[in-house]
Image (cartoon, rainbow, N blue to C red):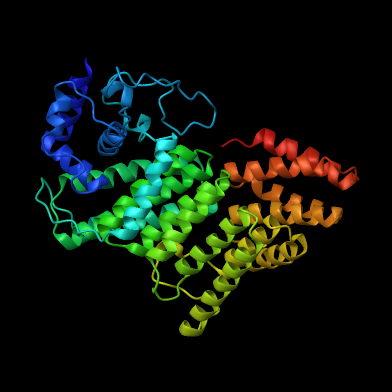
Length: 454
């Protein structure tokens, strides 16, 4: 099968004309990016210019729910890449590159991520485009079967269940499960009948599902898929007109960049997210945005910027409590239900650790862990490792061993690549000390890391 027939096969499966593909490209990249007739030339063998081949690949992958590699569409221009055979590959990712577009069992499908610098540039463009443009709400459509309030309620309940599962354990089982629900919800968008109001609600639910999938994938160490799904969540949140949710998705992309050492990118994204929601009332989501800006400043060693953002975070949270008369205020953002005082205090402690203030960090981390009171085991695991690091820097070996032991108690409960990475780094730091308690913790860390798998 040649490249033009593969592109044609994709369009046939979607029941799309070349004009429809052109409209999708202009929706993603901006009005006027290509003419309505350009895809007809691609079907005759020509290749799109600049970054459009990747855009076409990602649009088709998103809609089909399976990889559509560049080299399968235009093999003369894009040779196959080496497959990722590592143990942490996203569940269902084909072990070998696909050389043809074919239907595969649902459990083996995955959306195709962009892992190159082009993908990172596309992220910045998508963020700025969201900031500067107001999207037209999706129109209703006619399809084979209608979507009603009962269906939307069912999707909403599943999203709530997925969030609770992520809080409690995370992991690949949750990831694969949520991916299937996301594809089903996307098929409703494409094939069903609904009015405009229902369409807006449906796009918002798709955004929330894509956000969960992206976040879980990222926590499992798969940055490429995490970023890909989060970008999908951003697009759907834009169509739903939910700027608060879109800003939250951008803050997660910022956090992901920070985890991988791209502090400048992290700060740029979180500033865009905050600018795009400027003027909104104080809420847990707003407090989280500023807290993540503090972490971005900290990752760059900017102590003053970090301190200002932490002060602003505390002020927003206190303002919410005063307005709502609660010690733990609640906003209208279902995706920010987990943002409590414990979360913000613990994150402040990590930020102080990153800017070289271990004493202040240890104080805030210990206070945050007390406030968690048994909830959010993954956050407690991460903060216990940070507390152990802070105490090591302060020369408190017994306290460091105690915090590390508490982190290890949680390691078997949650599947998190971030947790394993933190424990591995902590183990290296502990090895520099010869105290008996520390040696026991090092041995126990070896045992835990050897028997816990993601």
